Image (cartoon, rainbow, N blue to C red):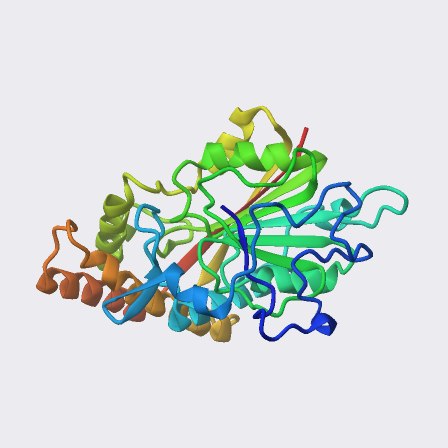
Length: 346
């Protein structure tokens, strides 16, 4: 089921705002240049009163209400602020909102099709909104399991509620770009998700991925480095164990899965190391912002650590968090590693 949530409350329509869920630039009836309608039969408008059905509260944090899905982190305001800060850090590190030949695949093609992009696990929708302003001729769709993106998107943007672990509604060969960022804890079968991405991409279309490693580490690590961050390593191992039956760590498997699919070529990988803390004198401001992101991250992990079946009592959880934070604040040289992969559909 895909449910549109970028439309206004039905009691407060505003056609000037561009929030018509069937609106495609230049096609007021909702029919795109590809010849199919964006207003599929399973897309309905979500009213304000419906939002509560998609959330549940635990330990004074707000989570998605779809209990069988793997994503374990909150979806409330503190977590959204952390994700927006992380978005800014990625932009600073990359120097852009994308890697690879995105400008080429999204270049206008007069007399042909309207260029289209799909954002998987869109979250707050910040990436989509930034990209849509840079590529106003491109139609952007973003989906997530909860409606936390803006309800007032740009006219070339549409957000929907959808489970990334289910097939998407778009026809074959309709997207020029599929973007999947920070899906590590949300996707239970990444090769299956890649198969869907390949299906909806046009030949020559681009798949672009960006994933963080689940814990801080070091550049050029040595054998003794693990002993320097025992608190971080313990917490990462616990998280991996708790998610082992739902969502395996994606780094470094994505390029392997892309190659094994037989659907992609020109697979390009890159790893970016971002300092955590103020130990790098050339990147102190960035490092301090990034350290704050990791401090907030452990706060968002607390409910998962205390969930039934975790095997951890309150004292053990406090010990895990204390050890992790001690390393974050006191060990110089820590970095977070961001891995990008992009590849063209054959």
